[in-house]
Every structure is written in structure tokens, then in C-alpha cells.
Image (tube, rainbow, N blue to C red):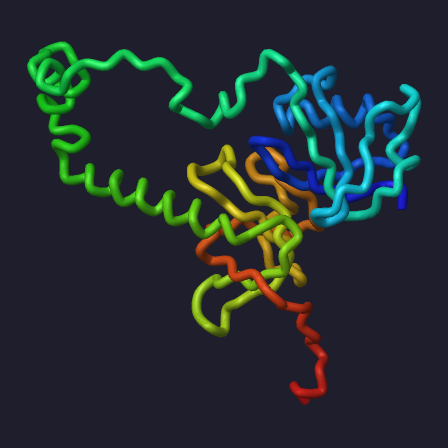
Length: 237
């Protein structure tokens, strides 16, 4: 097969990508830059099968193609950022951000603050709708916790409403999206019961046939031994 479906992982990201075996390693790195945010010159690529290290994709002639390596469908290319100026966790560790802090009592006294504006206009926590914001934050935390037990390639069963409305498939994406806040899980169903092909609003998160893809919240996904169901099993006769 000249086209491969591979998993791509980095410090801040994990997704699925289709790559041609005819691409050179330099071309692969160019394709990985918008996904990982790592410049090609600072990318170090490693090949894994499941969680087992197979080989490094570095130190080979410039014209070496991806197909020269023992890579198969749904293997993993892990991207390491070798930039010596990089600050570990700089994109997701808010503790690294310098903050100007003002004592609460001093802030409460200010008439030109956002807090004062909200108080005057019954906004934020000064409005009953503030409780909805708090509930949303709590829900997002629950999604993050549920996503910890899910990994790319897992077989799963998705609860779309009731015992009789469960759909089986394979996890193809886990992470944040541009179409809505919070953690989402991209699933490729075994049957054409989805709503997309792994893309939403012009942004591709994974690849699958049309109507086989769907994005669901992590708490709706149960992973485990869920083989494809035989629609023509003798048990149904």
C-alpha cells in the first residue's frame, strides 16, 4: 500500500494522518509542522509499533523515502522537539506565564475594572447565568478525566442515547478542536452511522470514509474488547 494511515504524537498533540510512502523524510517533517507546531529543522522522528520503539527516522540520506523504513498502517511517528531554546510545557503550563497581581480588596475598590463593569451591568457572577459558566468548567474537567483512559487505536462502543443506541468503532482522535471547547474524541464507526469523514468546519482531525466519522465527548466512549458486529450472524435468524 503506497498510502499509510499513521498516528502522530508529540508533547502537546496526538492525531492520525495519511502519508505517502513516496515522501522523503524532509517532506514528512514539513507536513508535520502545522500539526505539531515544531519547525522541521528541530524535529526528531521516531517510529513505534504500539508502544515498542522500532527505529529512528534520522541520520539517513536526504532523499530517503518513508517507504524505506519498516512502517505499516497505524504505526506511530513520535515527534521530538530538539530546539534548545524551547521551554518545556510553554504552550500548556500557565505557571510559566508572568502575572500582574492586585490584592482582592484593592481590586474591589476600583471603579474602572472589569469587575466594576460587570457589577453595574449585572454580568458574570452578578447574573444568574454565572452558574452555567461554573457548570461548564466542571464538565470540561470531567471530560479531561474521562479522556485519560482512552488512547488512539482503541476499539470502543459509543453511547448515543440508550442501551439500544450504541455504536462500535475505533478511536482516531483525542484532543481539543476548533469547533467547540473541551476535549473531544474522534471515532471511526464500523458502519456508516456517523456525520463526517474526520473533518469539521474545514479542519481535518483524522481521516475515514464519509459518514463513518463522528466526534463525541469522552464520557460517551467506553473502550475495551468490542469486535465488529456481524450483522448476518446466525444468532439473529
